[in-house]
Amino acid sequence: MRKVKKEGVKDVTIVSDVDAHSQCKMRVEVKESRVIEIRGDPTDPESKGELTLRGKHMREILYAPDRLKYPMRRVGGKGEGKWERISWDEALTTIANRLNGIKKKYGAEAIDFHHGHNHSGDILGDYLPRLANLIGTPNVTNESHVCHLPRLFLQLNYDFGIL
Image 1 (spheres, rainbow, N blue to C red):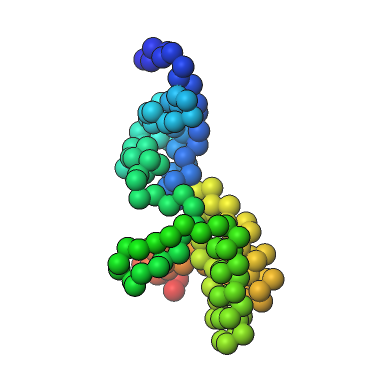
Image 2 (image 1 turned 45 degrees about the vertical axis):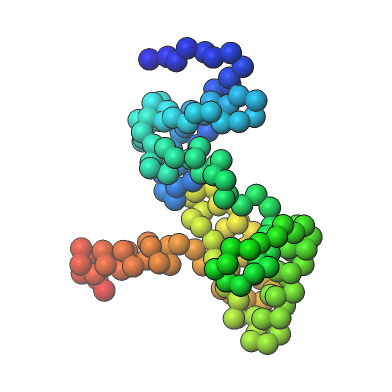
């Protein structure tokens, strides 16, 4: 069933990178640079037009009033909810100074860079190993260390009896 074309609305096909393993095709309606509707793409051979729960609510997530859009620094105590906006230069300088402080005090191996799943369009997984190497830490982890590997070990043990 084809939707009626709406005036000033672009219908764009994208591949979702919001869920770790799904990579579902989505149809996104955009008007004046704002997403107005997200729906599954029935031509996707895996999802057949269905979306994950997160995919169904991505418009709400995208326009949530408390979504971070720029760097913030806490100005109150933990839990007070008091923040101020800072520049990207200040944020990156603060992070670099803290990483250098940890490296100096505890050694480079005290630093771990954790990122999401590479299959979800997580470009950090491409860059963090290089950053970690420059800092001198071998520690780059992702969700598979707490999600996939335990399941794999159970499967190897119980299903195949090889552990």
